Image 1 (cartoon, rainbow, N blue to C red):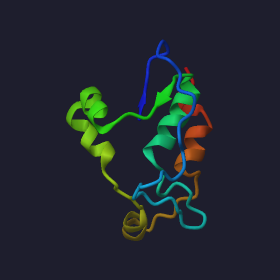
Image 2 (image 1 turned 90 degrees about the vertical axis):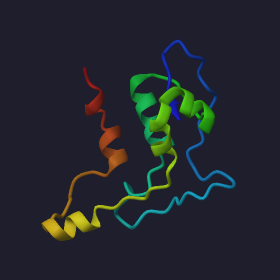
Image 3 (image 1 turned 180 degrees about the vertical axis):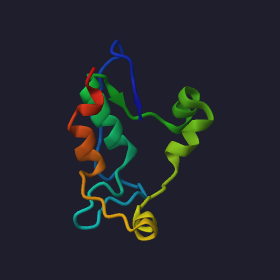
Image 4 (image 1 turned 30 degrees about the vertical axis):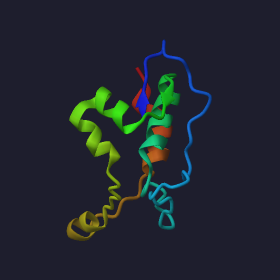
Length: 109
């Protein structure tokens, strides 16, 4: 996914759930909806807050647009803060990723 310029044509929709044939996991532990958040959901949220169109693009188009960095976006890399919480005795009590981004304070000018 890529956030495009305001002059680009707006797509009719962006899929935000499981895609047929996808190996991605769309389950989250109870109380932690910020784990396993697909990039396309983050991009769609950013596009909505910035009033920019968002479109799914192929791996080839991603490489043309982002170069070698596109490889990182294509990795299935579920991430957890469990080790950090254990080592630092850290107990996060703030909002999850999507809830925090959707609050809008990152997009204020």
